[in-house]
Length: 149
Image (cartoon, rainbow, N blue to C red):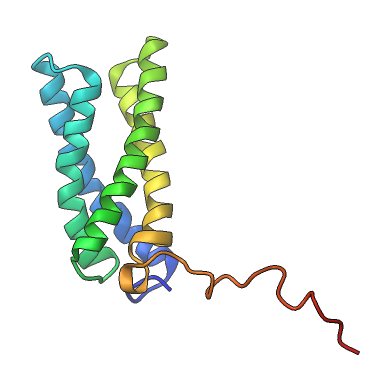
């Protein structure tokens, strides 16, 4: 069970609102650093880091009505790293194929956000901040050892 009241759609809309704040920070920092001749991948990592700190706090309090704990922050940071890897891969491929920097950044961001939303709901902001356990997902072999008559 994910923390917070509201349906999946309501949490999704809150995620989008907070995401827009993060996107504003991310894109602003990215293009500022790019204009200062910072390499694209470094500018991308720094801009995402800045946006992620802000969005963690906003997601914890607004989107998922959760607590700001060290374990949630570490989990969120790991989710951001996974999203960064996905987004950086897309960014690299698009830049290598001479796409515009704006188009590359948009597609890499959409890819990263999709992965991050799924992981945030499924892992980071679960009740108690813990990942799913076997108690919540019973073994498929349960009850197969004995036949009932």
